[in-house]
Image 1: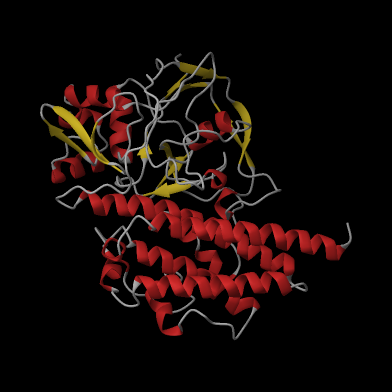
Image 2: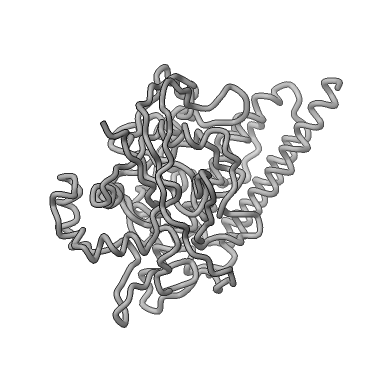
Amino acid sequence: MARGQACTALTGTLAGAYERIRARTVALAKPLSAEDMQVQSMPEASPTKWHLAHTTWFFQTFVLDRFAPGVAPFASEWSALFNSYYESVGPRHPRAARGVISRPGADEVISCRHAVDDAVLSLLSTASARLEELAGVVVLGLEHEQQHQELLLTDIQHALSLNPTEPAYRAPAPRPLRRAPPLRFVEQPGGLVEIGHPDSGFAFDNERPRHRVYLEPFAVGSRSVTCGEYAAFIEDGGYRRPELWLSDGWAEQKEHDRAAPLYWAKRGGGWHTFTAEGMCPVDPDVPVSSVSFYEADAYARWAGARLPTEAEWECVAAGVTVEGNLLDDDVAACTLSPRAATGERLSQLFGDVWEWTASAYLPYPGFRPLDGALGEYNGKFMSGQMVLRGGSCFTPRDHVRASYRNFFPPSARWQMSGIRLAMSERR
């Protein structure tokens, strides 16, 4: 294929992905009112309108300002409002006060999105000299947008859960009733393995470089821990037994008087939980979600097991097709589902819930952040956080992969975070 034809094919494919992913973000916000999109329910969450504006700011700042100077549909006075954490780019509005940004309004933000989209698509159709460099930044921007699609859903779920009327994000969707299969432990040989993203294809900088890790033989749970199994932990006094908890986790649990995962409440003698479909009875067969690392670790101890390391998790997920209950373009997921598992096949490695690992979020050997302001994307957060793997029902299907490293503080609960057990070889 001639260079001109290759450039045309690349820009056409990238433009199609750009339009599809950017449209999905707007579709996720469609069920919400302007008032819904303004709410910030806690300092760690962001309003829906802010997500819509910030992802647009990203393309203005890192694509248009760099590759098409002078093309600026995004108002310059908005820049500080919607910069997230890029200190080298300029001033930032405080994260905890994003909910007070009542202006620009939601309609103005959507209009600006369309103008930036037109400018980026025009740039893609005309750029040639720096096409490969441009394409790399656009792809990073799209992966960044998909991260914010998931955050948009987790953040609005938290906001709606605090409304006394318990409004649903979406109407209940029919789905088959299935029982979770029995939990088994699948033995793994361990040994010298490679983890990290290979050289080809997109990956965030924190997924590289690929490197070798030695694993002792271990076993991993065949599926995620279910709500029914976690309820047994609660009923056995799991939240009242300090011997099960890490010191910081026990202190936090006592400070907040927690007795169940986030969104769970006892009603009529049974557990209910707030979901994208509103308040519903807890389904004992779906994976437990919205638990912190501390809760996941305490449950694992109670179950006579432990959490897998991220190297163990990636070792078993490598080569497995990304399939499961993930977010599609028709926004058909957003709810948890039990999954069948047969034979020795591991289930739910991708989708339903992110799975906490026992690994702190640290750089891989030889890690190098991206050049310039984009180097602030991941590297500066490599302290005080724990790694999660696998994606959830809020994660776009084409966004997750075996090497993907999600990370949150160990106390975080408002994400779709769950548990997979592991065990060391008994000697």
